[in-house]
Length: 441
Image (cartoon, rainbow, N blue to C red):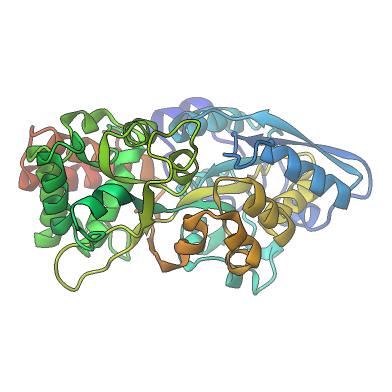
C-alpha cells in the first residue's frame, strides 16, 4: 500500500492513515508475524547507511556488519551508500520506498523522520516486536522522537548532542571562566575580539536548512518557549520566544558572530573554529574528533568542551537537541525477520560497544557510556553527554519538514537583519499553521 511517488513528493510527506494494513497486499498482522523471527534459511539484506564518523580509521559500518554476520551466519548484509546530508537522504529514500521497493531492507534515518515515515506507511511499526523494558536503556527524549501515535517506527543507533567548544588558552589569557549564560558569552567574546586574539567570537549554524532549525530549537528551549503544544498546535509565542530570536540577532548585530553565519552549516563553522578563527563554537559531539586532531586542527590541545549556556536567570542550561540516527525497517522488505534482527542488533550492546570504541559518535545505549571503555577513549563528549538536557524538535507531526522550513526561513531573516524578532515570530507562527494544514510553504 505504498503511496504514489507523485503524491508523496508533492505533499512533502503529507499525513496518511499510517500502516494499519499491510504493504504488498499483506495485512499488518502477517507482516509482524514474518518480522518476529530471524530466518533459518539464507537471506541477504541491503542496509542504507551513510558514512559513520570513525575515530580510529576503520569503516565502522563494516565492523558492525561483520559482528552481526558472526551472530547470524545465514544472513548477509550489503551496504547501500546513503547521501551525505539529512535532506538529500530523506528525498532519495522516500522516492525509493514510495515505489514499494523491497530494498533497502533497513535504512538509517534521522531521528526527525518517524512521524513522517510512519504516517505514510514507509516504516514498519516495531513496538509489538520489542520487549516491554526495551526503552529503559535509552534517553527518554530518544523514545519520544521514535514514536508516532503510540507506535515505534525507529530503533536507536547513535545520537548527536550539541556542546559548546571553547578556546581554553584564550579564556585563560583573559582570566575568563567558561560562560554559563549567553549574555556572559557575549561579553567574553567581545573582550577577546577587541584584544585582537580572534576575529570571531561565537560560531554556529545559521543557514537556510535543518542545521538552523536545531539551533533555533535549542535557543527556544533555553527560553522555555515551545514550538508546538501537547496537541500538536502552534505554541510559538510570548516573551520567551522573542528573547530567543533576539539573541540570535544580537550575535550578528554586535559582530560576535560573523554575518556569514547565515550561510553556515556544521562543517563551515567547524572549519572556522579549527582554523583558529573563533573563541566559541556550538556544534555536535562529533566535532570533538576534528578539533582534537593535530593533523587537521590548528587549535588541537587548546580546546575545551562544556554544555551549552542558558539565558541569565533560572532557566535551563546544557540544552541539546536530541539528534542522531536510527534504523527503520522497510515494510516491503522480502526479509522482514532478518531486517528486524539487524535493526535490533544495531541497538544492542555489542554494536553499541563497537560504536563506543571506533566511531566519533555517541552510542544510543546509555549503559555503555558508564563503562571504563568510555573514559579510556578520551573523548569528553562521551562522558559529558549525561549532563545535558535533551529536547526534541517539533517532530510529533508528519509535516515536520514544513514546520522546520518555517523555523529556519524566518530565523535566517532575523540573523541577516531582514526582519525583527517580533516580525519573524509572527511570520513563523503563520507558516507553521499553514504547514500543519498540509499546505506547501
